Length: 346
Image (cartoon, rainbow, N blue to C red; front, side, top):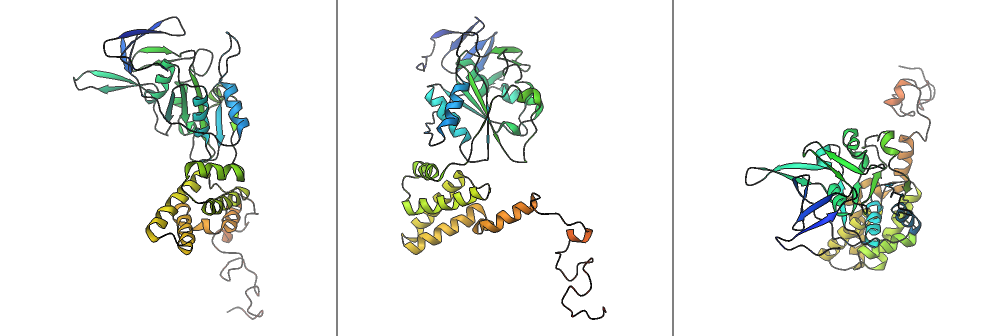
């Protein structure tokens, strides 16, 4: 990537549509007589561990095999906390491109995604380009994180970017911006209920779907070791055993939960002294404080989750919604079922 440009030096970067973008200093560009302040790229380095096939698939999406070919903008799906964003970051690093991340939320507006007007110190309006638009201009990689938390109006503003047109139009700034040929994009999506349903005309532009799974036992331990090299092996193994059991029971405890659990446990051990009993107690405390009391009994938690999701037959009587079937106060209980020896009702 280019070195920062000294003050006063002006250079021109050729855009895909043969227009030119005049750049003054490293973080300001002029497009159609509008000065845009660019977002700064992330300088995070991330090593991807395990599940190499899906990383290879993501890299394939961003390839261009012919002058008439275009890169794809895939959606990466999976439970929270298993490394969807980390994988996209690793792919950007492998491509040696600048990385931009935009965190999507339920109240994200089109202008937040594109260009935001800001009142400058001189009283004039300054236009700030989002990480997405900055990646478009500079030819970087943008990750739209948790994209299915965003509403349809915001997605509609990206429709021309995600197809063969590869441009966005800012109503606020009154300009159109075409994407650099090197621009790449991916969208991560969590599989939970606190999200919007993405319209079909957007989903058809976010292809293919790359499904990330929970890591294997060996990979999960290697991931924990990578992020927490100071944690001893027995603590890592204890955490991996818990996480793998949770994965088998289809519970949503993730590798990220394991990392946070271990961080808290190690801090408590630091306070109380490195005694074997203190270590076990600190780990159990961290489990409860980080993941909740229900995490102490995964089997019971899985049973209740299955029942909630319809794994068991729902009761048919109205009283079953308020009373346990064996409750003697259940209005539909037959006489004699409560163990009163079949005596006369009082």
